[in-house]
Length: 110
Ligand code: HEC
Image (cartoon, rainbow, N blue to C red):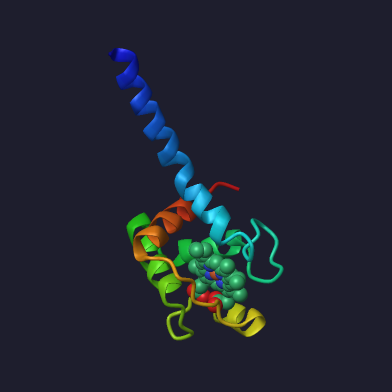
């Protein structure tokens, strides 16, 4: 009985730790490389701009997920990147998924 409970806990910890990572790597890293800016600014650079504007995790997650949900030049924190690469295309993800991804980006270590 104890073993089953313990197994259940470690399984959900495992999922909690890898799910946002999978989301990020499946959906964003084709364009956003970790540290090199090629067809889009690196995620390190994007994170830096957002960190400067929103040191608070909740605000960071809220702004980033809303922006990615509906990318607009007017609300961009990276005007220079739009001129260089053009506005990021709209991706069909729901807000909840984007919040998970934004939280993962906030927690990223380089
Ligand atoms: C098809 C390529 C592509 C994909 C896929 C992509 N991006 Fe981007 N993204 C870009 C480009 C190009 C820019 C720079 C221009 C801009 O800011 O709009 C950008 C900019 C951004 C910015 C900065 C926005 C600002 O303030 O200007 C954020 C945040 C971002 N991307 C997050 C994400 C996340 C999260 C994902 C995955 C869910 C993702 N991107 C997937 C191309 C992409």
